Length: 280
Image (cartoon, rainbow, N blue to C red; front, side, top):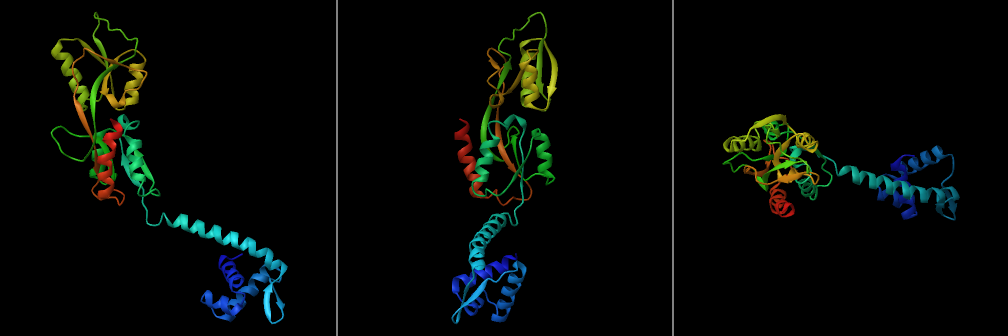
């Protein structure tokens, strides 16, 4: 059954007249009559019958009425829901794996509040890769570790570097300290190596990782200790004391070369206001 024909049929139900129904839907009476005849032919029933000088719904028409109302209502609801996505494009958001647990969900929650129909595509890569994708227009925004002495981006939180180990890990002073660190472009990597070197502590770089999950897995196995931001440490790892100090880094949101509609001033201001208080 054609949805327009059902709408026309319901116009008759509301007005009780072919003439008034035709006016209501902006059609001529002859066009309206032809549409109703076509609907009757399709259903092989008579939907109307004479009651004196007036037309009323037949038994079949009364049955169709309840179904037509449901069908038209469902059709309207579907149109309304689907239209919400008109001219929408997904937000491509980058986030290092380090911040997936503590930062990413809170950022997404804020981004979804003003525009719940905007889907978000998340790309988890190191900050350096995310910067490159921002610069080439492959991302709309990225959560990254801010470069030293820089004021770039919208500040979200600070993260203090800590040393981590399996809770039962014991250092063997007769052997170089086994390390599992991030790649060499990470501040924690450089500071860890520099701090151990200045202390005169022998070390062996067992693994360089580009994800926090890889580093945690190696440390969790008990074969090495690591250095990462406090926000990335899981409850099954121990934080070591009496180790060389590690830096504090700033976590910020960078926006791409072409602003995404969701990332307006109001949304960015809310991110800056809300995220730090939630993290702390």
